[in-house]
Image (cartoon, helix red, strand yellow):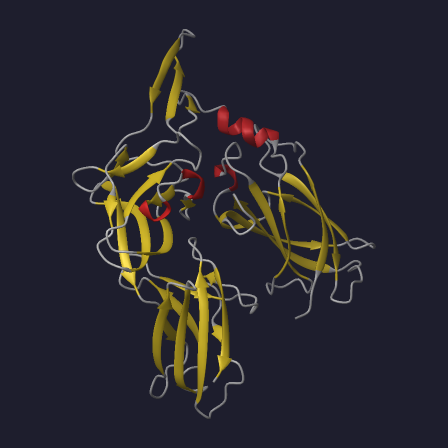
Length: 369
């Protein structure tokens, strides 16, 4: 695969705007596959803000089309591109580590290649202040060490009101972590559900009678969440119980005027892009010792198979497809279809092996057998 390179520099500077800067500056030198700077060239950039890790939840994505200077240098303002995912003004810069992922197409199109992911060692100060200074009558939300939110208000005479809790049976934190009897209810190894807001999703193999609860953060003393008598998610609720062995999509979402958890026990399925002929046959097995799925696919041709997606939780409320945008053996949720190697009109058999992370990412290999 051709490699593109970019030197990355982030400058957290105040930009002129009406109230709060809705951007921060970014500078890079773009190189082509041979390592030469792209001088006076039109390039496309896709910039994403990720939460917690370099492969974490995507909070926001935008694209830019720029022209480099004679030395391959390009400048842009992150937050002022063309948004495709999320809302820049809705990012809570005051919580959790943030990472910036940059992808580039040196031809100026949309065939992006990942050129780097970097942690923001500091965040735009005006963006943090924006999350603290709120609109008229809204008050200021304060979060205690255990994750409980409180609201500090003031009336028109300037009198402060004591903080009142903003947590209710219909609210969960913006970040929600899962833990349970499978990890001895250890906060430090709790796993972050994917999703900024609702729905929130996680994937995990669970044994029968596993007890599950949720946390506002993986720190000791964090607020816990469980089930009330009707199954709704509430602070300090009871454990959820998993009824049988299997791989589960754990889905936290609004159901029947309340936030509830759905545990969908599923077996991954292969969705072929070709629609002609008799579909190939597939068999799926999961190994608890290796944590990998093995899929045998028999009788694949260009006309009856084509390429494919891995479908997750088709039995649940929110099915998801895994593809591979870069054809690099790493999953992208709702990404491009995965290709079969050496596929022809002659039927061939393949073995697909893949692992699935809690957030729906993962890696795979596919070989002809």
